[in-house]
Image (cartoon, rainbow, N blue to C red):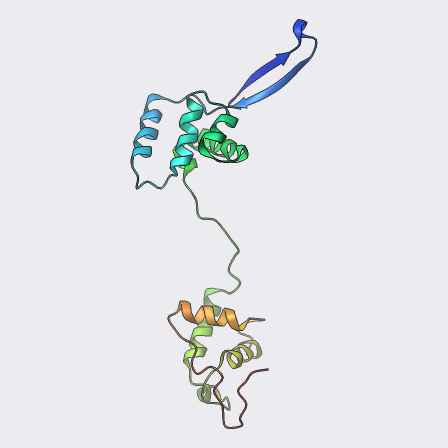
Length: 179
């Protein structure tokens, strides 16, 4: 695509090996200026390392040389050159990493917070305060969620500015809801 073929062989051309050296595409004057402006602007959202890869490649440096210069594996140097060749400077910006999709929907999270905010007695439960274990059991039995850990409940509540109330408090029967 944007690679320059290099041929090495034995005298007489009897044995040839083709190698592909990857370089950034030929840059227009405006692109050079944009790269230089971006590299000087320390508050930009493009890594200086990525900008250096493109500038070094445009100056004719090979991937292995660039790799040593910017202290990055050659595979990653190639990745950034390819992305620049396809998308320009936008290809050097970090996108949001997708990560693992949320396990619980927004509605489920809101229901967890709402239930945790309610007095257990208002839900016809035989205790006056929630523990995380009791809340977990209720959420599963009431089919708000199929399964959930106590730690996940804690994280959801904290994300909504709530602290779990009265962990391990005793109810009238002396059952603290733990197992």
